[in-house]
Length: 133
Image (tube, rainbow, N blue to C red; front, side, top):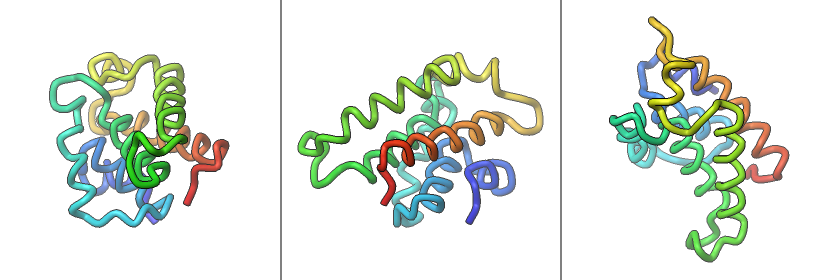
């Protein structure tokens, strides 16, 4: 099983791609390669510095974990997502790539520290709330 950091650094996926692949492995989401490609455009804050691709992928993972049939018919989805977004923002100092990059982006490893720390944060969040499959 590979971590998000492994996918990010060793296989050169962008932050969003690496994150969803790491979540797929660690949580057994059952996503195929085609499904994981849906997050490709979220890397680099949707390529324009907006919402962090790591966060976008964890929101998608929560969608897979918490959506029963449709989002608005899944009572755990809204509080589960909003709770994680709040925790992510408080932990890392924001949700936008343009705000996070100055703190976390480093020459040669890009945002690997954020990718790794966010994976640990998400794993604890899922476990603490009983969201695992």
